[in-house]
Structure formats: structure tokens, C-alpha cells
Length: 441
Image 1 (cartoon, rainbow, N blue to C red):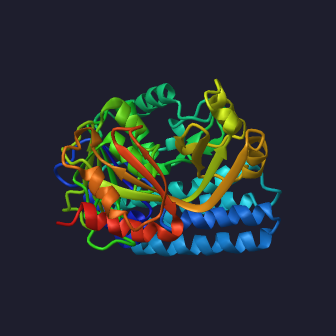
Image 2: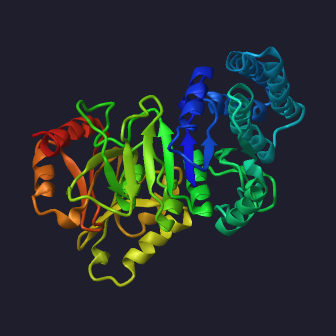
Image 3: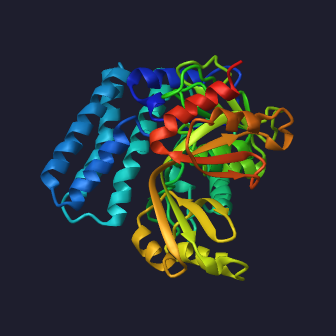
């Protein structure tokens, strides 16, 4: 069994859906579950509809729903050339848009908002399944993700329940080879419509792969794998052919947009390789993420913006038992994660990426001593197999940054990561300098 997940741009038009249908029927693929995101732009439109309803503007929300309905009608007619087949599909699509319209009649609840957000994946899978079965004439089973994707009481994926429910859902179709289902959406522990939030459809694919013991999970996007640097600001980047799960998680957490850090955790736990592929260039080898790691010391660089650095200086810290615990408890109380931390005898510097509760945190920190805050910072993450850094890659990285003001360095806490804090103003220059110093020969 293989799992193939296609993102929003991969199913963003009738032509893209036709291309995806051909990919999922490639002869070398056997039994497979295809996980689809919503068509590109749909989720943003649904979020806007929800915001309008929260604001009490049902009139504008209704207009947005009707505009989205017309877009899907057009895609259905283009995708399904037979008028009768297209007409039936449009009737099915309209059931989802009628659900949306039904939510405009009363103040929107949190449950109603989650129902709104679920419609995108339900719409895209309906169209692709209809094309595969009615136009190509190939057998495929549409598996409703709401039948087997579950959260537990802590709003985390309930892996045992997913495994049991998915097995029961697949059981009547033992002879079938192709299944199509929705990414992102699920049910809560109470049975209401919900979603996976972090990682979205990639997370769905990884959870499904773990549940069925898949041999491989493929994540199809519009880029040919995970690149060694940010191609938006650095010229001459290239896709990395192999990464370990730990390396990929570090890159995803620190800014690599192609992958969410949560999304590969189930695959990593079960040792299932994850392959990142390009829908627009299916012949490209992409990136394979597995339990194996290569010999390269530093394989890639990523950057994470929106960082706030906090320095706490206190003479009471010297040899003070429990000081760090008291410090961390403040961030715990305000549910704020720490990304980097460095210490000296009298000071602690750390970073956070969520400043929502910063005023309350600072008020408590000032009880320990003087506090200095630097906003608009970026963490640059250098990822690789640093346990085998026998060629001085770390030294080359630091040499490349000789003209860049560095605020903090975290090195040694992980065998896969060096984290460097710089001003966001210097981020692009730092990425370019690292690219020249590490990857160009």
C-alpha cells in the first residue's frame, strides 16, 4: 500500500485534476490511497466566509459562497465533458454549497466554522473521484475521511481509533486498488466535524500511512523536493535527495514551507519513508525522508521569521538552584514555547515565536532582574549530520557569517541542527552568505 497526497495547487484546476488522475494510475503503483487537499484558493475563501459570518455580514458571505459555487460549476463542466455526468456532479456540489448557505441564517458557532472549513476537501475529492470513475472509467472508492479520522479528548490524532476505523472502512473493498479520501478534516472525540490544524493534509497522509502500515508516503506539491536553501531569496538552490526524519523535522520547524513539522511524525514513528515529489515535474526524483542519513555535515539552511529575543540578567542567578525552572514555568503558564536558549553565569537569552502574551511574560520576568527585548529577529537553522562533521562545515558556516551581526548561537543541543539568531533585516544577506560558504565550490 502506498499513500499519495496532492496539495491544493496540484488540484487547483480541471487540467491539474486530469494530470493528478494520470499520476495516480501510473503502472508502477499498486494498491494506494490518494489524499487530496482543497483546490487552491478554496480554503482562503472559506476562511473569509467564516470571518464575515462572525462579523454578522451574512449578505457579503452569501455573495462569496455564490461566487465560489460558480467557480466549481465551471471546473465541473470543464472536467466532465458529458453534460449528464457534469450535471449530476453539479447537483452533488450544490449540496455542499447549500450547507454553507444554511450556516448564514444564524450567528456562527465554532462548530459551524469547522463545518465551513471542511467543505473544500469534500468538494475536491468529489470532482476527482467523478472524473476517474465517470470519464476515465477506472474503478476507485471514495472513502469519507469523517468515517475514520478521529481526534482524542486532547485534540490530538487518536491513532488507535484511526487504525481500527480505517481497517473497518477498507474491509468491504478488499479487491479494490484505488481509494480517494480527504485530507485535513476529521471528527472530534465528541463526533463533531473538526480538522487537524497543524500540517493539514500532509498530516492526514502520514496518519493514514501509519494506520495501514504503508510502504511509502508520497507528498506531491509544486516544487521538486525540499531545497537546500530558500529559493525565493537565494539563487542556485537545489533539491536535497536524502534526509533523515530528524533533519526534515528541523528544517520544517525552522521555515521550510514545503513540509509541516508535525506532518511526518507518524511516518517517522513507524519508519515509513516519505517522498516529496513535484506534480509539474513527476520525473524529478524529489526528496526521500527516511531513517537513514547521508554523510554530508550540513545539508540545508532554513529561516524562521517573527522571532522575539528576550534577555534576562540577574546577579541572583549565579549558582541559584531552581532559577531556570522558575523561568520556564512562566512560559509554561502562558503557553508560550521557547525556540532557542543560551545561558551565562548571570544571564539567560531565549527566543519565542509567539508574542501574544509577551506583556504578561515580561511583567513576571522583571521580578528576576533586568529584561531586554529584541523584536523582528530571525532564526537561521543549519541542518545536517553534525555528528560526522569531520570537514569543518560548522567552521565554514561561521566564517561565512563574519560580516553578519549575530545575536545568539545554539550549537550542540542537537546532532542535526545549528541555530543562529540574526536581525530579520540581515536574514537574506545571511542566507546568501551561507549558500556561498557552504554549498558553492
